Length: 237
Image 1 (cartoon, rainbow, N blue to C red):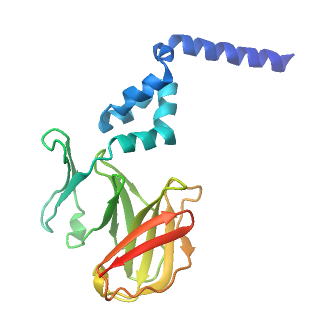
Image 2: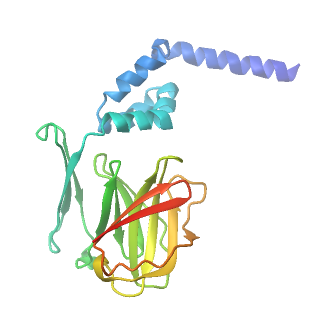
């Protein structure tokens, strides 16, 4: 009898919450249609409107639809100088650059003025930045950046590459340790130490993967894509 009464109490509280929520009478399809037209900076703040809106916005289905609705190519510029106190990332829309534009300012560490940040090609609006054994994933549009756990390796030369797995809907970062050099990718030989990090995965750590030794002396560019557990790469001379 106690168990039944507890269920009835929970149901009454849920119904009461729905009655107090003015957005509960709006059809779900209409809510999604409205949210798809909201600017990126405003979507994050709308999760506090109601529990229903939080569930919709954080769902993978809505995120995919939102990215597809804003899949028009954008121009990304970086303003960099070793002695500038503040550096900038500029993102412009090719459709209307004067209206849809964003800028993110970055204040570099004064103790590391001469360090260079290496960026992988952008993937679905996200960028990957590497400095030494540290890797950071960022969204220039929203200004959000996530620093990944430090890469565990004894080698000084590290290359990081950013990719997207469309089957598992996951972003992944591949780090390769090299035998010599640091950022000059066209003149390096890759060692047999390769680690992969999956964003949003259950394990928040790098995992070792097997990979063939790739000779990069004759190649300038390196493109990555992930499909399930298979890594696809393309080298261009």
